[in-house]
Image 1 (tube, rainbow, N blue to C red):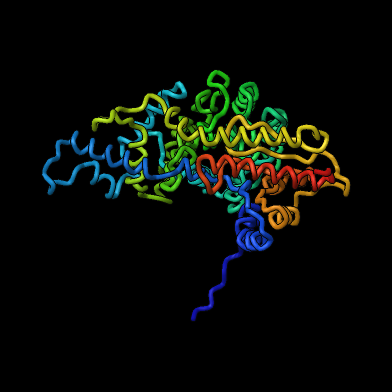
Image 2 (cartoon, rainbow, N blue to C red):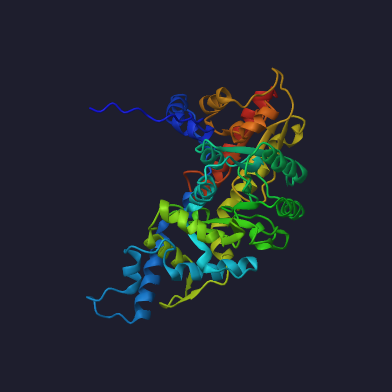
Length: 473
């Protein structure tokens, strides 16, 4: 047997969500032994009601039958074009019809004419994150990513894979990241010799922040990145999981300046999670050498083809089916908007959100000196904060407290501290140590049982929160 010596690699910290997932089976067993029902307030998964594939599979089959009829294929020995495309090697860009359809429908929603040739298929938004990071890391120079504090743990995990990449984070208030702090961090990174390519964020239904950036703050951020000459990487998984009135929804960054933004779309949160369909879109131009510039989309396509030469065309064609509406008689028409498609899914999350906020207010609203929570106008989460010391001192949302919540109350929750990048925790060693991310998206039940379970879960959480600060229930 050969003796292999592993190359020197930097040991990476395991995210709190991964640690919780690994320890949950044992904790669940302990909770069950104590007769406790386990409540899911930690996972950010799409709800089973939203992702039930049966309706989709029937819709897809009907759409494919429609395509076959349009092709005029009646001979069972003749392979229809749509079927050949779905199961053959395809270009890295995927089937043309999928990109053209998505470009038209998505573009109408956000007032933009999208170029389908600049839509780069990705394996969900996570694939887009990895792709854009790889593009800027390949040169080998020291690179600094600007992001929020706190930020999506998947981004920090991906950035940590590159030993010559660092994160410079920006503290937030109730409107989003603070613009002047962003400018300060960009300049600090450059002064330390880093190349700063982009600012990464989830502006709508921020994960884990539990709120959406205001329009005013988006405009302030856009002004900073334009002046400083960097891009915005806009991760948009919750763009359609929006609880605000239509006339009060802020604009996504890419609709404001598509030449300044790398936009990451995923179909996962609107009922299409398993196939992991996503797209990277940008109209930005990058200077490469001797004053020459090239479309970012071309560089992204080259980078993508080196990682994943052939995407799953069957999954992409299935997504195309979602973008068409049946007339009930075998015909299909292209959607004019994705909002009706999202609305059927949004109903579940809207109900869960209303239950969460209602029960929190009923049971903890009179104790605002101890407790606070964000009002999510998009996404899956609220950030719950312990604002004052309890009878026995401060409430620390560390690993021991999280285990206690499962074992004593049957509650699965996620602490916020691990969502803060390393530099944010150096600035403030207590960052996130009094906060929890509560999700209202997932349960194992449906219909009225789902509503009852959500109410029961939030009620159990309120009892636990009061016990932690020493308030008699």
